[in-house]
Amino acid sequence: MFQLTATPASALADEPVHIRATGLAPLQMVTLTASLKDETGKLFRSKAFYRANEAGELDLKQAPSFGGDYVGVHPMGPFWSLKPERPFGRLLKRDVMSSPFLVTLNLYNSVCFQYSATVEPGASQVVQRWFFSPGTQRVQIREGRVRGALFLPPGEGPFPGIIDLFGGFGGLVEFRASLLAAHGFAVLALAYFAYEDLPNLLEVDLDYFEEAANLLLAHPKIQRPGIGVISVSKGAEIGLAMACFLKQVVAIVCINGPNAIFEFPLRYRNLVITPIPSFLERMQIDVSGAVRLRHYRGDPRDKLNQQSVLPVEKVGGQILFIVGEDDESLNSREHAKQALDQLRSHGRSNGRMLVYPGAGHLIEPPYAPLCYASRNNHLSVPLLWGGDPVAHAAAQEHAWGEIQKFFRQHLSQARSQL
Image (cartoon, rainbow, N blue to C red):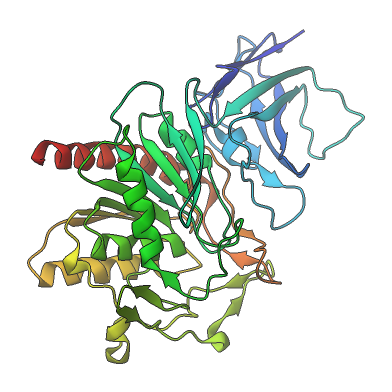
């Protein structure tokens, strides 16, 4: 009988797991599969083929996969290579506090290329992947117009405060905020449309986001004088606008976002920034059937579009642009480069860019599977996000550490200056 172990068997979703097997025949070929069902019952699976060593042992920290969903030495490959059984699915944890994702690891004593309900694994292990740490408090926010969820680490604080903004699929997305709270940040996951009584997204009302920033800063457990913002896609457009106009924002992380206003006008007090036009005829259809939006938007460098470019030279805090070079939704590297050029032309040096070759649009916390393309509730066609699974996984792991270092440094720095 052989044994399969995964250590720790219960951990945060951004923590690595050490997978080993013992009791195999010397140099035996085996199949390792991983599977999980999300909260709606959708199935995600991965598989890889390994060879035991001469002692009949397998250690994913040392042994290469010969084939399957990834090739080479990838200790967390079974997790980040999970694929939806039905095309265009995206793995998202909705209820972050009540239950973990349960990942079932199965080890078969031969090369099993096809999934079969009749073939029994020789060993199995269930791994719990949690999205909050014990003692974390989740507070539902319905104050004034603001809708969201505030995650507070255990203890009295004060904690560095962050607002978390996701992109154009709307609703309230909490998994990144709850994981950051596990690392000592107080994070407000902020909804801004398609949630409860929030209006449809016909314009971006920056006053709403200022109300949210003031609400967070007024909380007794939040460190002053300023907050951070972590943002992706459409959320990164809004996050960068917040950094431009709101003095409360002292550190902003923009993950694959633009440097200008697109699709909807941005309104702040008496100011209105009109969007750069988009061109439906430039949309492309990928071989998968998903729509590539990378070339669909107008160019912020065009002289006709200058009124829509965000005035990043007004940003008083620090900016970290995180860019996936294989982003198929947005030319995010060019947008970040334009913003940095704009800063330099005004004698500013408060921005930097991390570029990840092979990473796609949806850069998430470590070990989350690549979402290459997915359906959007507001569109009838799936959207292409891009990314190579191995490169994307490496980008997520590195970027997550850099994001935390960035916020620790610059939110603490703002406090010491106070």
